[in-house]
Image (cartoon, rainbow, N blue to C red; front, side, top):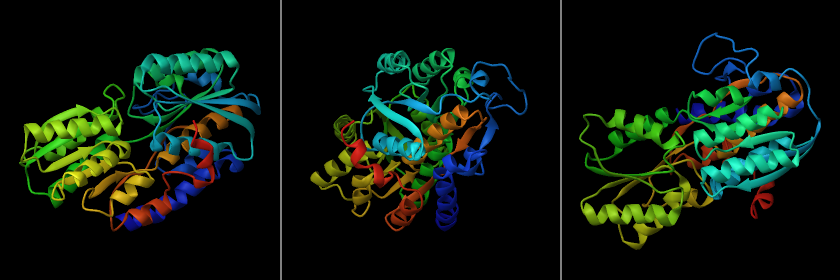
Length: 359
């Protein structure tokens, strides 16, 4: 399965990056699993919502130069990877990019979008903190005729009509993948789950898939708390979990940014028998995967999510109707497969690494 993912993923990823030059159908090129054209409510078949708020921003060409605004839910290597995807989408255009991170604060997310709109941005890309605040930001953008793209769409919501395109991450499937990995590679026992930010819809859906996969298997989730994608907070969750459950044998964290801190803590504590599984990846985490302190990750490319969302905005500005949903591929990666998988679908476009270091 990893070999198939690598070969197909490389083709789709590179086609997505080239979408700007290819013109029409660019988001379909990012992934053959793209679904639900803009103007159709996600989660339905047929049921055109032509004339909806989002549809009014597509079909007529917009400005071919100007400022694109990007709001990040916080700042870590994952969101920097997202940003490199947006920069990649803008290659060869006359658009410039401005980036703001909102410290995992819903009110800041909305106010950052409002500030961008007041500056006269021609497009808005949102890497959501919460589904509600991101949707409210997109609604304000559409009211000004500004197309908005979503970098991490967890599933259908009432806000869908305000986005011209979304990067769909099937986090229920991601949770299932993690659960199946545990059943195949670990002895049933106690599990600590470190969520990201509850309210995004991201962590809750991983929970859903994980719980379903582990149902009746003998694995028991004894701790499930938010780490806010912060390594220090995540370590605090794990440390307290071990204090309450000294026989804890498995840690699952929902981001590389948290797992990096957890892996360091496990090493410092000499806990090399704990099975630690993560989600996504960054440069530091790939290094930890070559040690006993991180066994696997549910991998997908953060850079691809930014590329997809930005390409949808650019297609709309060209007067095209991009695919609404474009699926981001995911797979369980281990120390034996991570390098090949990252080569096919990089978590960061390294050409833009320097640009994102000082966001």
